[in-house]
Image (cartoon, rainbow, N blue to C red; front, side, top):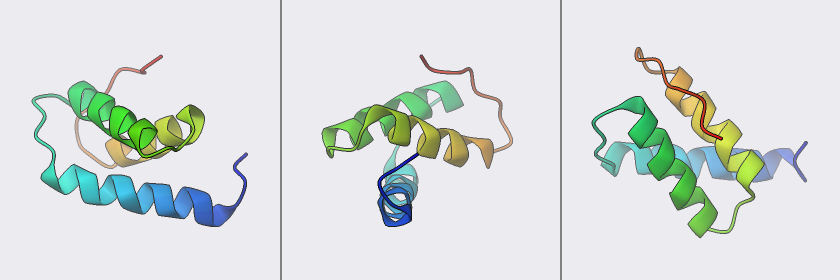
Length: 67
């Protein structure tokens, strides 16, 4: 799990704001961009992947799992 709930909430909020300004043709591309952005901000991979999965899951399109 994560160091704290605040860590995940801050990350989810950061990615949620990024989604509004990111252009992507497919959910897979959007997820990839969100993961790269989260990693560039210094968050760990697993937390970023989980937060991106949660955001992508709220859309109508399906997304392949990113490894």
